[in-house]
Image (cartoon, rainbow, N blue to C red; front, top):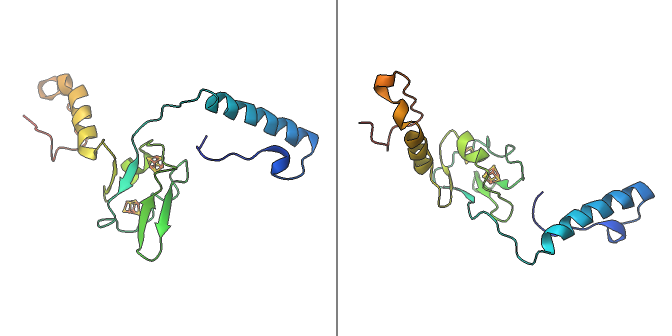
Length: 138
Ligand code: SF4
Ligand code: SF4
């Protein structure tokens, strides 16, 4: 569910009974969230380096929250941080590797994978390297 302003029921327009019941149930779910007073959210948001974006638009339709828009005038894509949930789908999909999670870079992700796989390195014969440019290999 994307954050934002929710409209349900008669304020949206005339409704039949099934629609009214369905929207009432949805409103109850939303109310259970906002009635807590405070909601903790993940601080990670994706951001695109527009200087290096090729404008290929591969990322545009991959976001499950429709948080990426294409800026026609500039020929680049841009993440709307209000909609982004930091899921990372676009980060992994960008062929130019110009999308990074704020506070969570591509290199830091690869370094973590490297760490997890540390005991599976060379002599075990099962080395797995996804990215080695900025990660020490010895
Ligand atoms: S996939 Fe990468 S290069 Fe292509 S439009 Fe999106 S951010 Fe730009
Ligand atoms: S990180 Fe996930 S939610 Fe955020 S823009 Fe990329 S695909 Fe969308």
